Image (cartoon, rainbow, N blue to C red; front, side, top):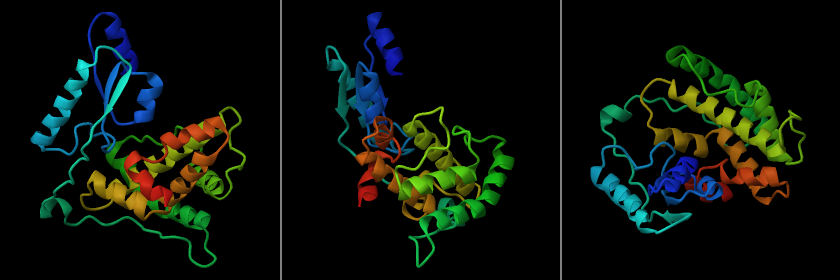
Length: 244
């Protein structure tokens, strides 16, 4: 969208975009952008809140007052919480939950077991939807888990592919792990909202704990490609918790 915006601006048409990932917008140098700290996929906030969505749109249109860019304005409001009816929340089975390693069981062990036990739900998701977003890393999901758990323990772990930078290997592996877990969890009985899935993934799953540990290493890494992934591995609203 940033590239399209620049093209339209060259033709004399003022543009503005709503950005969910500030770092991407900064890199692409969008002519005018409003950054919103909302869940990915919800650039206007929660569904069915017309008043809030109208405020977001007005703020975005207000960025057009900037005579030229690139310029990014931060939206000040957080998205309101989703209010659910009993019918919407009743019956959702919380996915398999693993806490922090206990005793001799390592985070690597927990993640491997979580992947094994979530696979049945992932296969069910494939049957229901007929598609998946897992596969960008080019690795089997077990290899993805092994690699990321190793990076969580030791950020100098050798990457499984030598045709990609270290950062790209990590990012693609994280993308696959998250997609696998979210698709599997969404296939479980009941109705889970995106917020509930996020709370489970980042707060309870072994996968989320591994990704947060990888993100902390990326923040401190001197490898430019790995350090850059710190911008995208953990969503902005979850980064404060991930840093603790």
